[in-house]
Image (cartoon, rainbow, N blue to C red; front, side, top):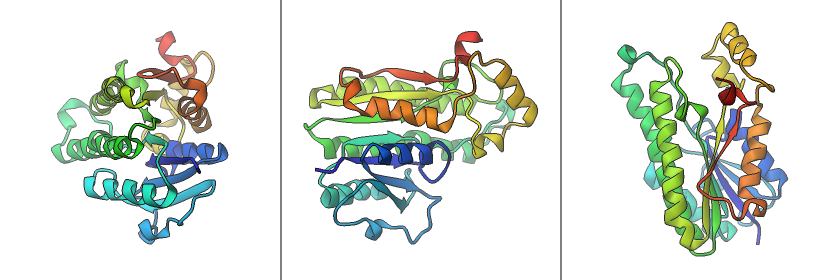
Length: 244
């Protein structure tokens, strides 16, 4: 049976790197992202899977759409083995500038979306086991200006990782998280000026991590090499948090 991996937020940045890395490991990767063309709907998924990335246009906050995707993937590919909850809508703001519409959208994607995809995946995996990897952040355990909303969402994701690890363990489903530090992706560079990048780099003992570094960590937690690991967070930040 072909191994199947679902990755949310896979059209660019970390998600794209994760999808590519999982395909290299022989997974048929189904990516879900509003950034894909609308023509990439469920009908574009092949009847049988081979290693590669299959894009699907969709909003992870739409529960019905997410559960439909999981059903189609299960029907066509024979199962779901790995899920990577990566989708997020990032916005930084000082407390007085937090707007309800922005916060609602962040929660819809970063929290509800994770719940819906995990919910569907756990049902599809059943008692056969599998791996769920959540992308959190070092902001869930450290404080940064303007990151209250983002840190709170990633804190929720980190907590959900631990709770689901216990809940789903009887079915052999492992749940872990990867917590990146600052990663110079197009999205993050659009929100951090060059001086901010320099500050972060100067505080990093080793080096700034890359999307590939995060993808390698996800691949490890998804693999049988981590078969006795669950409920854990793997920090990928070049040592930034230990030097703060």
